[in-house]
Image (cartoon, rainbow, N blue to C red; front, side, top):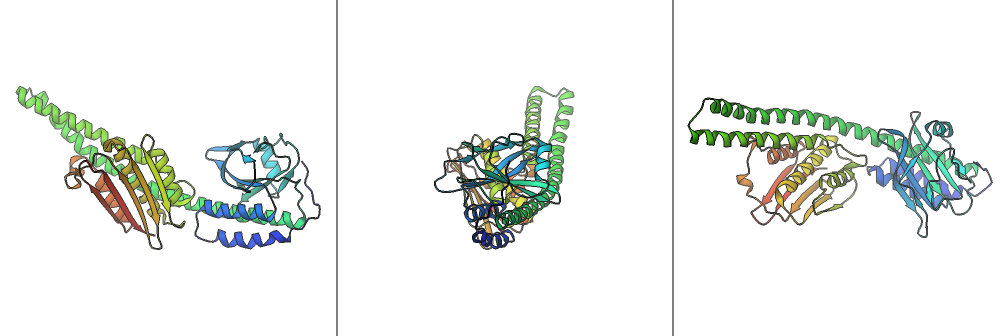
Length: 375
């Protein structure tokens, strides 16, 4: 490892500090703020490629690539994930100062670039004495940081660390809202199951009384329907309970939920409009409505095309889930009394965020679920 202090003009990069500082106090998503910061680092210090890595959840010694900023002519790419020796990383990054490498540095981590970079640097991102991320950069000419450039990198790293810590705080707030939603879902499971199980118990008692054959067949059919309904309620709610809010805001949440819940669906996702900071409860509503709509499409639509559209305006967010499947008549869809909670719950969630949910469908023409909530 070589940390150099050769004199090199660094004043041209100082403007990046103010621009990143202004960006990080804006309302953009973490991915947008981080991308702007990485672009400033790359341009201000004439780097070939800069990547931000965040710790993988539950794996302290693994970093996952989150955002990359690359020059137009680069042939280098950053690895998707980095595994490192935990104690070596703590020793190397405890100061929070940037490190410049001109060798493999295998004692710390395998070369993070493909093809391996001959000159690269590491900028630890430390918040409250905890490593919240790492910026890794590659350069064509050998890197050499003068005191001004080293200070700039350190300050930019501090700003990015603060941005990541703030984003994680938002994520925790959103997680708290999800926990409240889980409690509500648990109550819904109980209510739905209570009806189905009460019906099943009644039919079992009737069957045990040795009723006439015709009455027994009708009772057995009602019993099968009650059990099937209970299974649907449990399955749907368990799918809901497994959803979490990812780091990166509502757009990242829509993309992640679509990727996870849309597996097996002919799905297209589009997002338009600026990044905004939604209230945690509003983000939870968007996630829940999208989850329920995709689950319905997967179970019932038999569609050849499903589209998820997120549009963010100055005052209103619109989420649409549209398919070209078999369709149905919304007025005839079952409600909570029939053990079918989907549409009712989506409408209630929309109202809880001050919004509106509409469902448009007809047999053989597909279905569209539209959620509108204030930004």
